[in-house]
Structures are given as structure tokens and as C-alpha cells.
Image (tube, rainbow, N blue to C red; front, side, top):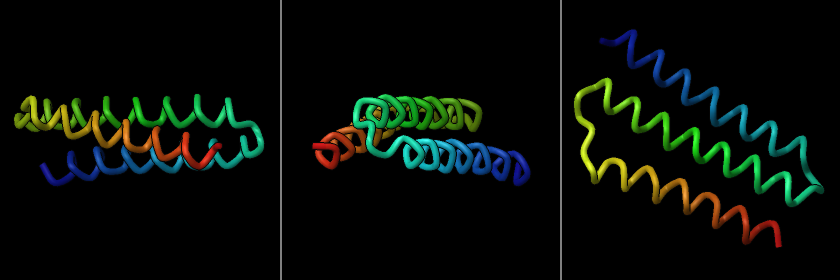
Length: 82
């Protein structure tokens, strides 16, 4: 169980670091940054749902939480891009 959580955390780390580095490499191109940010947020939401489903504690409020955090990240990215 401990190794599984470590693997899940490593995958999340790769999603977030990969998204951040890709976002940084697209600096100056606002449209591309919004696309990258949206893909990263969607991957984060998918990771959260899969992680909790595999852990056996997936509930609607968990899905809502991940979706809201992803949306907040996209909204923040949009406000910074303007």
C-alpha cells in the first residue's frame, strides 16, 4: 500500500512538474499557455479520480473538490494571462 501511494504521488508530481515546465516553455504565447494549463488541470482531475477510485474512497464530493481546484487553477491562469 505504501509503495502504491508513492507511485501515485510520483505520477501526480510528474503531471504538475511537466505541466509547469511546458507552461514555462510556452511563455509569450497566451493561447498555448491556456491550452497547456487546461490539459494539466484535466490530468490533475483525472489523477485524483483514479487515485481515489483505486483507494476505494471515491465519493461525489471528492470529484467536486478536484474539479473545483482544477477550475480555480484555470481561472487563475486566465487572469494572469490578460
